Image (cartoon, rainbow, N blue to C red):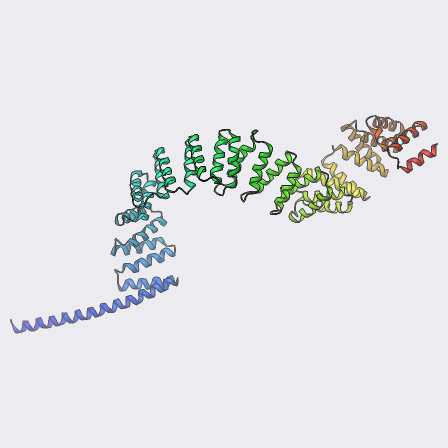
Length: 562
């Protein structure tokens, strides 16, 4: 070999060897720097210092551009920061260098889902299923995707394979049944549910589902058999009992279904509204007697699923059936756990009024104000009860307070006006009394009793007799044969010194029942006296005294003429 050529070859070899040694040294240095930087980036990510982590992972990619792990971490962070587009960019980068990585494909499927890209999402799961055919998570998700796109045979193929590998499972059977339903293979639905009942003998759920399936197919007797067979195993199961009661009600066999209903009320697996709807069929049936209906309600109110509506219906049912004592008992029982049911307080007050238990009405209505301080009706009951107990000052005070809470209720407003007028009259506060009588008449001028009372009070004071006359006359126009009304009208004529008209109307008052009223009899005597019929006057006064023997003033009047 030429010596010069040999020297050149040696120089080149030495140069290449030197460069290779330097390259290896630089590569090791880069890997070392990458490793430290990658660890720092992971630490920043764990500390949720995402911006710092992003910069460090990007620096990692600058050091080693084919680092799929760094790109994957960047995809995870951008997804965490709600930037799916950036996340997608980096997962694609990662897959470029490691296209079969399971977690990268899963990450891409998540991003596709967030972006609503169903085509990409399905592609990811097809890839996952092909690479990992024994992973049931991927198989099941792909079977759902096939189902949604009406590829039923492909979906069933995956589901059957999973069932072979894993055994009968609820979610697999349910998806198969959805496919059978959509493809109108209804008989296969019952087969799947029967299979679940066999595999899970301790579960009521599948019995119920099979029963409901037969009901939906109008196969009522099959459904009934399923539920009754289920009850041979789960005797006290409330769900199976009430569903059986529902079927019997559809067959109008309420007497047979009644015991199932009683055994089913209170199920935690069925909403209270659905249970009450079933019970309502029995409650409206004439085959079920009052005692049986009370037990239905009792089962509801004693259960954990009761609500105010059912409690109110129960109490109203008892009131309608005149079971007042039982209604009161259950109201007070409910009050032990809940006193916030406004309707029940009203029902309790109606019981007290019906039984003339005024002191209890007063006690309970005063308590109710604490729970319902803005409810006008509570104040009315309190004021009304004070009025009946003749505590007129407390009555008017409470009524005045409650009147401010009356909103869009003319009937209640009139009741307030009436008892304010009466309580102020009883306290001799006549201007206030007249004010509320007039307020009442501005709204309702046809209350004959109020017209008469107001007129009578004016005659007692011998004031505004013309007004009293008009009020009294109107009451008689409404009720012409009322002895008390005719007496008031006659007495107004008496005070106006029109004794002939007074006599005419007092005779009518006496004729239409006044002979048993001591006031009317005495007025009759007074009017006869003014008409110079002294003997007849004495007769009527004595009749009055016989009816009211303690009337000392009348006795003196009689004695003065004897």
